[in-house]
Length: 110
Length: 117
Image (cartoon, rainbow over all chains, first blue to last red; front, side):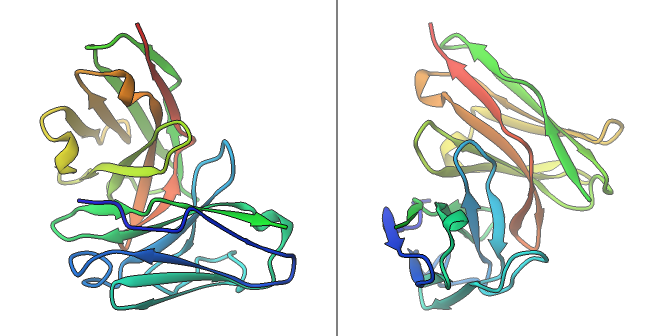
């Protein structure tokens, strides 16, 4: 199972929006609506911010939104804030009780 | 609120094994699967395995088949991950994560494992 492909870096100024992509295959992202996104600050455990493509857990700001088209999922962070600077990982169910993560995107707030 | 508490840091020799534990508190153990995820230094997340504690049947990522064992002890609400034949490439932080609807919702604090001669 190959890792999902994410751009290594992304950046934006405070208040701007940034969209991260996560490309998989017809066996994972394209096959299931079980794409989730995680935010990870240095030295910390990842935190779930989007599940089932576009749902937000309780407590996650609505600045975070998710979508999917075909084999590519996207995470948009609107109104960038300094605390949004972190690594972001996507994940997808890949069938037969298997899962795969993305390669990760480092978001910098300029 | 579910909390996952992992065992402490480990230093291991190449060729040896490591066993990491993950104790669940604040929730009904066994009602959701527990996955194991590792993160090598400066690298991304890598899914390794999951287990549904009430069933005790694990699923392993193909990459780790034959080298990993995941188990659950319902009496102590604890899940274990054992990785054998360690090499320096296994140096990483290992996380357990409670899963809901096929997402990794609750995370342990992570267990650093260093493999060095």
